[in-house]
Image: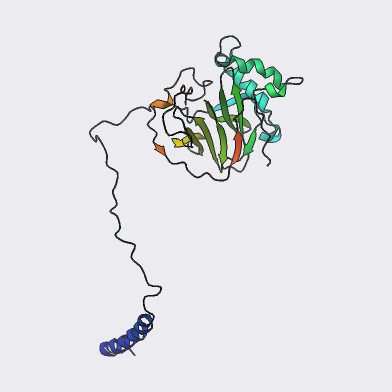
Length: 286
C-alpha cells in the first residue's frame, strides 16, 4: 500500500537530517576544494577562409608507394630467411639509373657491395643487419633494413613485408640519418636539422587501406645544444622519397612548415643506431 504524499515527505525529511548530521559534524575535512575558474575553451581560428583549398601536396614523400622485390623469395614463407644483401642487390638491379657504376648518385654503394660477399671486408659492406618485428599487425614479422648510400652520408631505410609469398617493399626513405627507432609498430627516423640543437623526426605507420607505411608525423624537435643560430654550414637535407622511386629532387626540408615543439617522451625503443658510417648492427632477438 502506497503512503500518502505527506507521509513520504515526513520520512524524507527525517532521512535528510540523519544524512546531513554526520556530514556537517565532520567539518571541512575531505571536502571538495575549488580549483579556480575554468578557462574558456577556444576552438581553432581559420585564417583566410576565402582561399581555395590546395589541389596537390606540397611535396611528395612517396607514401603509399610499394614495390615487389623481383627475384627474391622467402624460404618457407619466413622473412627471416631472406638475405638482406640479396634484397639490396635486387634494388640495385631494378634501378640502374640510381646505382649505375659510373654515373649513378649512389655508385659508391655498388662498388662496396663486393665486400658483402665471401672474402670481402664486412666492415666496408654498406648493408646493415636487418631487424624483425610485426609492424603491419598481421601476426608475422616484417623486415627493416638499412644500407649506406655512398659516396655521400645518407642512409637508405627500407621495410619489407610478405604478401602472398612475395617480398614487398612498403617503406623507402633516403636521408641523412642520426638514428632509426622502433616503437611498437612505428618506425621513427631521426635526421639532423639545419638549426643547431634541433633534429627532424618522421614517424611511419602501417595503413591497411593503402597497404603501405604512411608518414604520420613530421616534426622538428629541440634536443639540446646552443640556442643560437648555427654558424656552420647547414647539413644536406632532402626528405624525399627514395631516389630509387624517382630521380627528381624534392624541396628542401627548410621549406616545410613544421613547428618547433618540445620533444615527445619516447616509448621503450629497439634502437637501431646509424651514428657511425661504418657500424654494422647486430640482429634484434625475436
